[in-house]
Structures are given as structure tokens and as C-alpha cells.
Amino acid sequence: MRKVKKIKHHKQLLTILLIGTIFSCSTEKKPPFNLPNNAMQLIAGDSAKVWKLARRFNNNTRMNMGDCFLSYRATYLKDSIMHDNNGQQYDCGETLTANWSLYHSDDNYPYIKLKGGKLKELMNLDKDYKFFKILDLSEKQLVLEFRHKQFSSKETTIVDVFVPENISVEDREFHW
Image 1: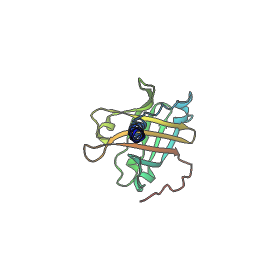
Image 2 (image 1 turned 30 degrees about the vertical axis):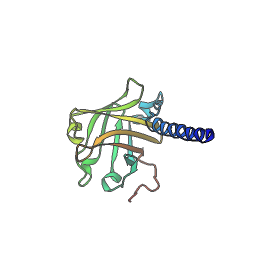
Image 3 (image 1 turned 180 degrees about the vertical axis):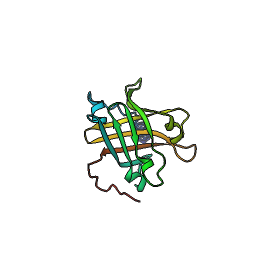
Image 4 (image 1 turned 120 degrees about the vertical axis):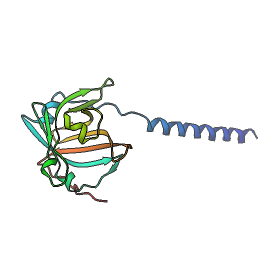
């Protein structure tokens, strides 16, 4: 009789530990990306750097890469101006031009802060600025994460993976 109680007790304890582990892992925050000292140069090059969208994820699900995504380019200038090419593409919306700067949150997460009048309108914001968390930055990759309200009031997490314009990306024309 005593052995049966002990086994039941161990099963209950194991179940509690397993549930606790699952919840603690799923809510754990990843440590901040360590921004390189030459981050400004990595983003904007010597005077300007053009980044193309290689992949986009919406709430961890890879998104289809239609014409506007495939043609999208974001140019970061050394003088802290950025612009995209949406206005030059058929039916892809207006061109965004904004000031950009690097920013660190109180808990040391690095961000690119975009600020400009059109940003509010184009991204459906209350303010004229937006923060994009830097998840990775190197000579060959820029990964940004941001919260975005889609076509409703529902907010999603977008992760954009950018590469320099001249880099070939396998499976870039992804479709479900």
C-alpha cells in the first residue's frame, strides 16, 4: 500500500515539474543581441547600404513572398536617413522616408528607431516613430522584429530577415 502511494506522489510531482518547466521555458525572454561596435557602419555601409527582404515571418509562420515583398528594398544612409522603394513598384504603396537611429531599451535590447511623418500613416500608428528590435546584425544579414497591427486591431509579431541587395537567397520566392 505504501509503495502505491509513493508512486502516485512521484507521478504528481513529475507532472507538476513538467508543467512548470513548459511554462517557464515558453515565457523566458531571450537575452539581448550584443550590438557590434560598428553597427552604424554595418547598417549603412560607408555612405549607403541597400537591404532586400529575404524572408518574413508573422507570429513564427513564414509568409508568402509576393511581388511587393520580392521587390522591396530599404536603403539606410550614413547620415541617418532611410527610405524604401515601395512607391517605385506597382501597387505596393507609398515610399517611406524616415530618420533612423540606434536605441537601447532599459533592459539593453538594441533597436532601430524610425521617425518620420509618413511612418504614422503608412504603418497605422498613433505616433510618428516606431522601434524595430535588432535580433541579428552582420555584414550579410539584418534581422528585425516588431509588433504590427494588420488589417484589424489584432497585433502580430513580424520578423524580417534582410540581406544586402547583391546576395542571392535560395527559396526566396516562397509560397505555401
